Image (cartoon, rainbow, N blue to C red):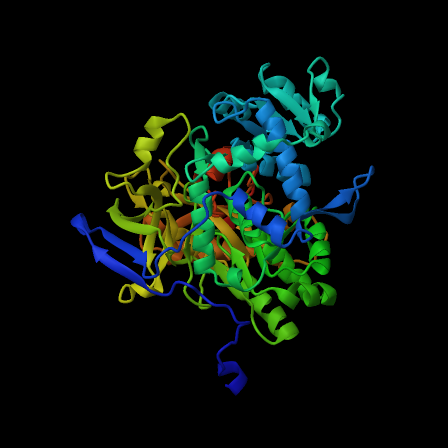
Length: 630
């Protein structure tokens, strides 16, 4: 073995703020852990950060988005500076005050990330009118608008905004109450909206501010509700998570202490993650606003049809930190192997990659490391984090560059974790200033969510990375509620089994959903990586569904399921059948959780027809079994 093969890898320098914890033991084998470092003071309100940066760096870009031409093509960047954003926030804020809006009559935002979306949110933030960015899927994919109606019924909005009357008109006509004002940025005359009066967003923007907006801003504080974010609602209707200034401000300070890079340089992000999701809307947008950074809205997505826009943006914009889901990192890693311009620009300034709790296949990590070593002579640290909508979301972060899939790390300063034995696993619970006070207009759900010591019960299971060294941190062990029993009464522990399938199928498996509730056998829905294309001679542009039908792909996964069956120790960990998914898990449908991990229950619910086919020997779907396929 050569020296280069045994040498330890080097990383572009990245400091880790929390490396040690205090651990104490409680009753009934519970444990409590908290960072040794104390949480430093934090702001009273997030709008203070907008005012600060508008005074100190007025001309710096806060947010940018490409202009869209009439034919739909995307052109040059349109930029909003901090001073422009503050002016817009005060104007919009005055308009909201004029309408008497409040927590009882908040603002609902229906649309995707955009400049108008950002300015409306900042206007709400400035004067203390709560807003709710609802999932656009509730308005554009849903046929009955059931979840949108639930959001509206829960919040009783006084104003509903959408960027496009053509795209959102049908949903507004079907679900918007008559006493809620509708504000639109364009296409207000669409047929769906005939007879429904609306206000132009430009009119809201042209409101002349008075001293009342600054009085309202000064009257907001830690307990002022900033926004409502709805949970994914995979098994029940979504719940409205209350987000306060205290939560958001404390969490941003926690991030600065856990990720010292935020104190060293202003963050530059190019990001597509949706703002109705806590990762995109609180973590990333909040990070930029709090630290005087710049956010470029990426209108690409980690799908074959849209990832080209993401790659185009990364050839032009050099982020300092980069956030994505595993499928997005996979596409970027593959493209960098041959795209010199992408590799050079994307890697020029980035100090840290970050993916949320979903599984990231080791070959993707390796490909990212190889491109970085080739381009800059060092690896870029791949980190992950853990949190949820109820924790603002930032909760745990790794302690060193030595990160493996599933590692969560240690709690951020000021947030205490409680580890509680439950149903054969260890549940993770949270307490701290970044934790929600509860669910809006749902006292029963709020009471159920907290234990008798005030810890929020996450339902997530964890293990020690090194039981002998608590400073190494925690790793993910699945959702407690994901585990189930077979018809035989045998208990299936989903987390370890899922990890076993992913490891056995590397590098061809991105993620796995385990099925078998009340069945005699365990089955699996498999989300493949793009690496499966290398098993075939099909052209690069071939649809994934065609790739997955190729005999060589089927043979590879038939070999996997055979190995899994032969090496199992019992029915609880013996996978006897699997099906390959050509459609990736959908954030819009709740198949990706607010933590970025696969939502097992939502996938099983949304793809119930495929689950039924998995166990139907007469199905026309391709089911792969040990030694045979149908």
